[in-house]
Length: 372
Image (cartoon, rainbow, N blue to C red; front, side, top):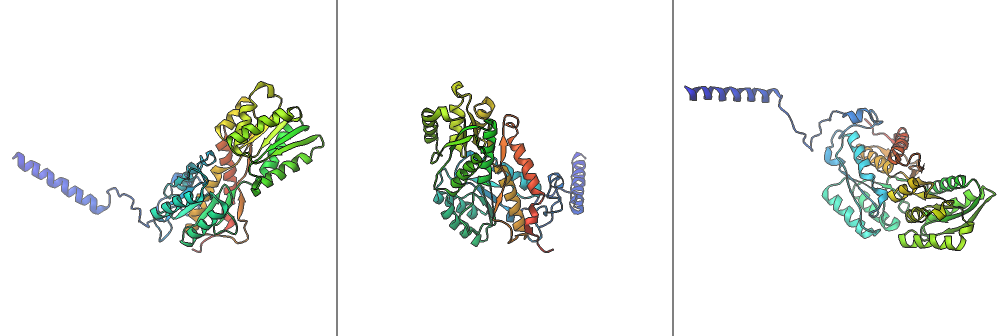
């Protein structure tokens, strides 16, 4: 009797299971190759892309077609926010999370090896900063020629380029604004020293010109000197210490347009004997931000790596969906720069996000939508 009861119960369970399965009430895991439209997420519904850029794979495509990644020119703190920003865009648009990598040093062959490996692995779109503008542009041509769209970030490759566009800082404007902020902190008068990177770099030349132009607008400001070729740690420290020793009585402020001199200023000017000297740095490395918090630096000019990666990922989704970049649009798009002081030093990423969302409001205006 006991066996008979157990047998009857098992039959009932099997019958219920079959009925449930036939009714379609069971859970169904998402097949990455499925082309069924996904239901928009809360993130998409609350994003600026709602009803503008399609959510998830479009007809005829699967998640695999939206396997994107970012590769920076070298391991550098500048790129720290990028993967998080790219993944935020991916989540809003209902596509897979992204990958991110970078060579140890600014060596194009090393970056090419990483890029080739990611594409062999199945990545279908890349955002990147080339390790070398010229050789990197050759790699871009190869990737685009094989059907992999490329959006550049951080700095432009050599042009003309097969990349769709470049999201980067207007280096002249950022350096000009930084110098103006320095002079205002100095009370509109005194001696200024500029600290810059490789003088053979066209970006450095633009930054130097910006410093000169800003100083020329103030009759009581003297440009004491611009020091170039110091975008490395030891050279930066030596340059700042030497100019202070030689012309310290003429210097009221420093404007740095690159990373290592900014870190050197944050350290050296923390000495109380330099408390009357003002300084504006570049970028938002923690050492620079700590220099602002301590008062060694008045501020820094932040670029927008968060926005570059976020908008680049959105762009890769759009290109995959069939959008095309308008021919009359600029190849180089200014991603913005911001003045960071003690007032907003703990809100750097928030500042970048807010500016990016303003850009996002009109981002699709730069493209031709796919025909429906």
